[in-house]
Amino acid sequence: MADGRLSEYRLQRRVNFYETDCAGIVHFSWFFRYLEEAEHAMWRAAGLSIAPVADGVAFPRVSAAFDYHRPLRFEEEFDVVVRVAAIGDRSMRYDCLITRGDTRIATGTTTMACVVTEAGRMKAVPFPEDIISRFEVASPTPS
Amino acid sequence: MADGRLSEYRLQRRVNFYETDCAGIVHFSWFFRYLEEAEHAMWRAAGLSIAPVADGVAFPRVSAAFDYHRPLRFEEEFDVVVRVAAIGDRSMRYDCLITRGDTRIATGTTTMACVVTEAGRMKAVPFPEDIISRFEVASPTPS
Amino acid sequence: MADGRLSEYRLQRRVNFYETDCAGIVHFSWFFRYLEEAEHAMWRAAGLSIAPVADGVAFPRVSAAFDYHRPLRFEEEFDVVVRVAAIGDRSMRYDCLITRGDTRIATGTTTMACVVTEAGRMKAVPFPEDIISRFEVASPTPS
Amino acid sequence: MADGRLSEYRLQRRVNFYETDCAGIVHFSWFFRYLEEAEHAMWRAAGLSIAPVADGVAFPRVSAAFDYHRPLRFEEEFDVVVRVAAIGDRSMRYDCLITRGDTRIATGTTTMACVVTEAGRMKAVPFPEDIISRFEVASPTPS
Image 1 (cartoon, chains in turn cyan, yellow, orange, red):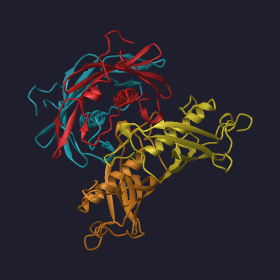
Image 2 (cartoon, chains in turn blue, yellow, cyan, brown; image 1 turned 60 degrees about the vertical axis):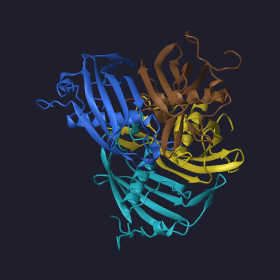
Image 3 (cartoon, helix red, strand yellow; image 1 turned 90 degrees about the horizontal axis):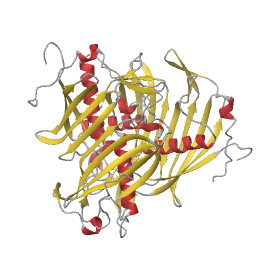
């Protein structure tokens, strides 16, 4: 982190009962929500909110992906590290690493756009400068 | 049903994998979503939608409850019957029976209000007549 | 709390994005999960886990209910207080109060049974003494 | 489909209220559940079930990804087409196309492994022949 710009965030979390499925492990769809929790916590740490704002700017997903290495089970504690991987004119990309102690659980990535909604239709626009200026791309060395 | 007014609706459903938990059964929070699915299907059958409308009228829950009799498991087929239990000036109440074949799985109830949001604050108002006129209270005899 | 028995637990929480719905507020089904999070945290504070154990004892819900007083919105912070309301031979009941600052958001209750599963069928049994002995009914004065 | 082998499946679906978020659209995590619903329906159409079986064989995800092209909103009807993209010795891959009428909503993919759990640890094994024999890789021409 240089001059107050954020490039990564670590969220500590515990598996809730309702996040597991009848195979006895966390359902794979939940990892995308874990990523989002860490991402939004990073935005709050940067003094921002992802909440839709007055002038109609919103940040929909363009893509999202996870590779699953090991399962998570009920009540296990784990870390979600989200890192800024790329900042483009009209998109931002995050990488995500989920670990339980020294065990790699899952690695993910997501890209989001910046849009305004006009007449019920989303249109891509550049990210506002006061958002972009709060982040910088993380160094390639994992934290 | 008399003169086109709806008083109940039956939804047929199958348990999805992501609705189960690590105890091997459907998580209890899902029954409230099953009820809501049947309720919204009943509104569509009545030519209505529960979606927030232009003039800001919305239908938040006032209360919701379920008694659980038997568990549901992955891939089991079940029925959700929702019935109009009471229509008041500013609230509607539904009862709900969930069955798998002849087995009673759960019985529930929910009450919803009609509100408009002014300056970020919800205020109760009477249900619009063109909504109320589509429903009538179900007879006490279960379907 | 006397001689180490727990009678209530307070969980601090923030609304996640995926807990909201297109009416702009937390979906009513989530309050049952908030209650469960606080309940399981209370079990952990008592040195216990609700996870299904080796001898097949499990704790399914018998009933669950919430009254909704005010909505919760994205990123709002709130408290979930769960209190032991009754300890019976084969059931335990909790009450739950959800607040945001001084504002009462919702009040709930849930009852759980203790069962063993034999030949795929649940059978009610008394709660194990080493579980019951960790809890006591909360005094009627709210915390 | 040749000699009874399945290579794709089309699921028709409608957006439920609880699948939307406060941005007014379906939350991106739900697309992974839509894919899974279609996948499990394809297994049922093939006379199979993904449910964990007696000898402990299970089918965890190795990876999952979606690209999002257009949003989905409450009560919209859409199709989920899942196609067998690859059948390997120890993994199967599906592609997924979600459409609303002629509009492409999202494209996804997922890979699953076949494992047995020994001493609490998952170990990859070949897919049972009576599962593999029910599927074949879809032709590259989209349906």
